[in-house]
Image (cartoon, rainbow, N blue to C red; front, side, top):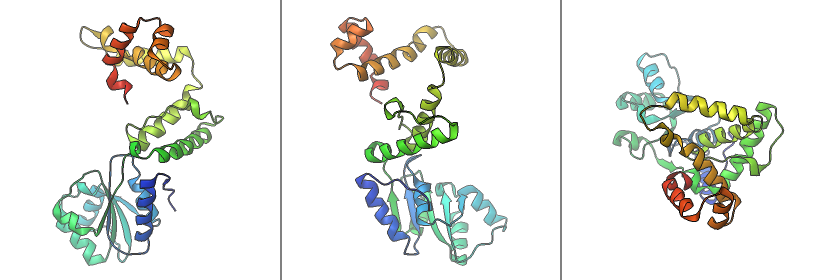
Length: 252
């Protein structure tokens, strides 16, 4: 059975709905942003069901190369179905139970009517306890995959801007970062700036790549702006200006 993380209160409520769906044969729609666990929840509900991308399934039905009856399937990103009548007729004719995922908040009314229940998954920003559990899971995974000793949670870089997708990437990067030094960091920054350099103000355009990490690190390390200014070698007015300039990045 798919391992669906449900530690936060709202995730536990969703899991209760998923447990109900395991015992009743109704069509269900799971909606939410990229990386919130829609496919994991679908697999939790129907562990043995095959997963179809919406466009692929539609083409297979058109080509008459799919032979399924009296079973359950998972349709990923059902909003990409363009021939809705074709899909609905195929589902009804072959007595197919559907668990589908979608990134969209609203679907075509015919598709919406297909589902008896919709489960909306919140972003990881609303699931603090789940983030901790997922961070631990991805840390163990990265340690095994990269054949490196598990590192301290305090050294893990946690990025949930794109939910679990960015979180997994940031955890893996945390492990890789443990193996690189200043030369590799400078090489990476050189390659990045070389690939993206354009216009006539590149120095100013790329300065944030140095300033934002410094300000973020100082914010974590020191308790006040007075201490930050002292250790960064800036006066407080300059520090406040830089914090204001980069507030979009610092508030992530």
